[in-house]
Image 1: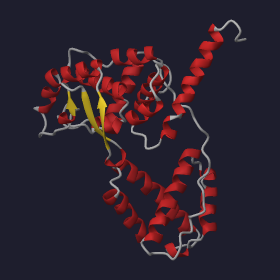
Image 2: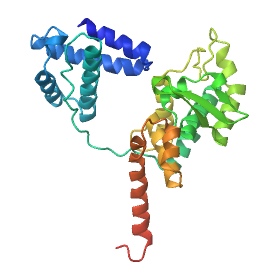
Image 3: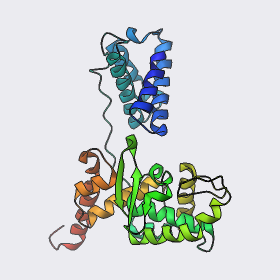
Image 4: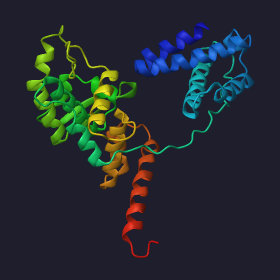
Length: 297
């Protein structure tokens, strides 16, 4: 269906979604088109509400996790809404099809001691790589930035005098974040003793974090940096950049931050998304109460 290409161009150019999000939409719609083709549905205006409901019902059997299945249905709904709005079909057959409910999963926050252990194992502080890796990890935990936001930073996005960093999030929305002292100190050291070493090897780029060839550090490389530091620190379990983001939010709430402030810092469009972290804090409070109150048992 040519309409799919038109929709993907729309979300990329007009809505300004990130390449990562556009690629996820592309995969979802390719799966949907393959499903339609198997059933002889070749035109977008031939799709019925029952067809989309059947597609949604088929996703768990195809091995998709609940969150992935829900996202696929959301992608299909958005596509058909676009097609109807553009006049490529008389009606929106997906209007009343709802994505499957996704069980709420609490974020896995790291204890603060684990976070500091990971940062301490970022690498050899006498090498440009170690200085860079520490700056990256301090930034991720100190601001709660997404990994894509961190590796997308330009040097000029960081203001060490004002202790702020300007990140560009989903939908090209920007937000100004406070930069803590530890992160600012680590970034300052990187700008003086790390980045110049890498920059002379490259063709010139404004990006803050560079690899050994002077090119921007990728999301995959940043993930590998964190994973290696976590292994050296003997931190159990799977540690990802989102682990630091979850820890950032949870630790703020545990120490009394208002949920709406945390919402702004994380760049969540809705406070409902942020409120999942409050449950983590409630669980912590419940544990402390059970251990401390003489009438808790």
